[in-house]
Image 1 (spheres, helix red, strand yellow):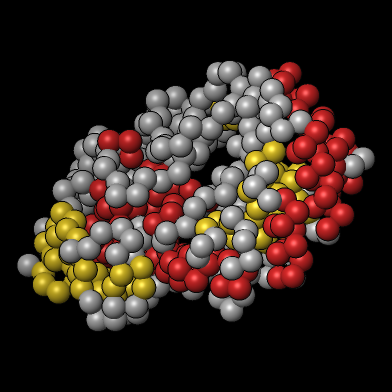
Image 2 (cartoon, one colour):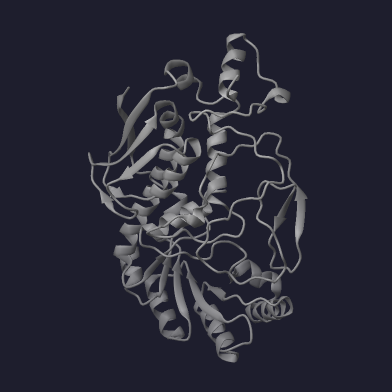
Length: 400
């Protein structure tokens, strides 16, 4: 057979289940079956997406990917490795690196997440070990088609670049055109993009592309609404993202007009109530944090959580005691689950010593009043953990 899918079709016709031993042995890959192709273990991974520098220890590390070991960057000053087994891997032909793309709004940097890899996993999840059996069994392989994207609700578009990468991974010959850009507003009934090429490839990519676009557009839409209502305060998301999709969730927030909080546990210290309780107090926690960063050669900002006026005053005392430390400068105080009156009082106590962040009970009804009390930022976990996906359809309009 000339492709894995053709081979699978013959196996299915013979009522046989493809065996693992015989999978991915073909050397020729048709334009409509580029999704499933073996990638040798140890092949260098393509550059990850990135636009943001994060200070870290000088320990060398490699990006987790198609390697025999998973190397994890660590602010502890050592490198951990664990074996990764990939008996069945997927890749594309001539796939462009995300770093070679031009973005209207670039994605946030993450040291271990790769957008191309996220897409690869999503496509592999959908294709399984056979592929789009419905399309392969009903549509002639040579059929070409044009499909359009249609907005079925008003909202802010995000994920266009991700959708392009999805189509490219399935079949690099597909032609994608947009009449809008990331962050633009669409209205119900508006056609805003087309994709031309193999009908089978279009349908193979359809659901994965829509899943990413609808989720990211839902996040961007909610962010835009909340960011407008919060002014003059600025909107942040949190780490309450879908596991494995953090870069995409946080990218959608940027597209919607928000700003990114810390990306993970590694790029900022956030000393919260449990840290304070375990460390023996806020002052002790900050002292240890600074000592640790000094030993490891790290330069990271510190945010302190305060839930009461007493904790606000303690945080200010810690800042006043060492306003310009050699390492571990306190940049922000989080005002957690405070009333408007308490936040206003806390902002008055803190003054312009550090930034302030309101957190807890943030909704569209409360964000406006919170933004008017003087805080620098408002963080909302609902932006990414309670997403209302934007309704978008993908329709084949002609085929030949």
